[in-house]
Length: 287
Image (tube, one colour):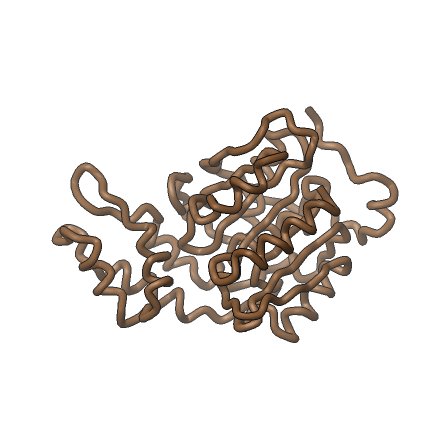
């Protein structure tokens, strides 16, 4: 089924991004599906952040899937999705575009952190595929992220061949991640295979790609998406600060920017009820 183009009213408000913006060849993402396949409500695609997986969103997707299809994907080089040397945002946007095209209808796309940048890149380069956009604690800017570099280095330094207990890996990460919640998040990537523990993510490619993951590359800064956008920041996070808010409004002029008190970068984990309420209101209005 062909993807319908936005209606005239939407087209009028959209400072059209040329949909011919070249995108790389996609990989086929591994997707967890929930919800009714034939629902009349707009489907939803969920893109996790760096070192996350589709499983991070299980408690929310079960709610969102009550009246719509929800597709939670493992991003490239994460979880069960294919390994690929490319890890830039145009490549990630191409993956999401291929997923939505295969569904045959535009989707509401939600992305957190790295996944939020990928979702923004998709909306900017293929606006006809994005019925509405939710961006969680990230802005369309290059951003410093030394913490994730340290996390990856520490994870890769663990001798998995000699690892017999998850608690030993937890102890090895304490120096770079003293917060138990962050260590628990990182250790979701540690799985037991037939020959012992392995990392589910492609850590060497992710580490090598950190400059691209922290970047906001051309041609994206010069593009706009005029559809409905909800940007949710943690009040205790640095990502959607004054500069980040200005960048969001520049590229997403219809954006509603909300900050949740008592939440850091992992907004949905820190304040799940407030986060869920914001998403529910946005879905009632736009999906």
